[in-house]
Amino acid sequence: MSHTSAAIAIFNTHLEAEEAVRELQRAGSDMKKLSIVGKDDHSDEHVVGFYNVGDQMKYWGALGAFWGALWGFLVGAAFLRVPGIGPLVVGGPLVSWIIGALEGEPLAGGLTALGAGFYSIGIPKDSILQYEMLLKADKFMLIVHGTTEETDKAYDILNQSKAMESAIHYGISV
Image (cartoon, rainbow, N blue to C red; front, side, top):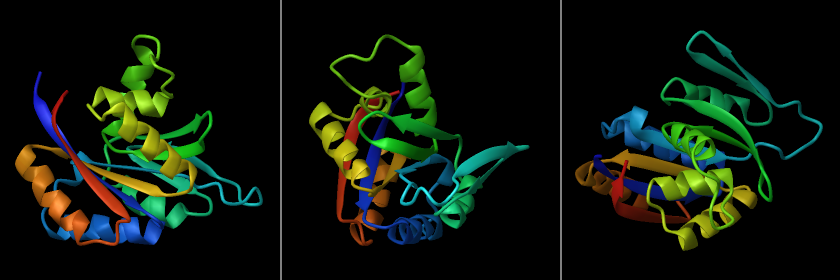
């Protein structure tokens, strides 16, 4: 079992999250250690969908250009309907942790599949509830996974971004 950390930032808009991703990329962050979660259901008038083409995820909908630009970087992608939150698009290593939580033991403590994924990477339950409420309110969550050194560097970058809040969780066992 190895230990890793996670730097987390919450953004009001997809444009702010996208700008932070570009800053992380410019600073040399490993894009395969980045996860992003957000909603894309602002209107029932927009058809939202995605599909795989080889190793590439194709996505269309209200934020299709945003999600489409990220698929090339991220390892794994999923579209989940989370009770109480609604439809979410998730990309990056977080996808495998959510799926792992779903395939594992029954969800304990009333956690959603998303919450169980967060919990499996060591995020405390009180923070999970806060993150889920922010996602329900149409915020975007950016997570950088890695060593303490990598996440400290990412946290510094995220703190200088337009994140409405940021946090870091150390010593997560994966």
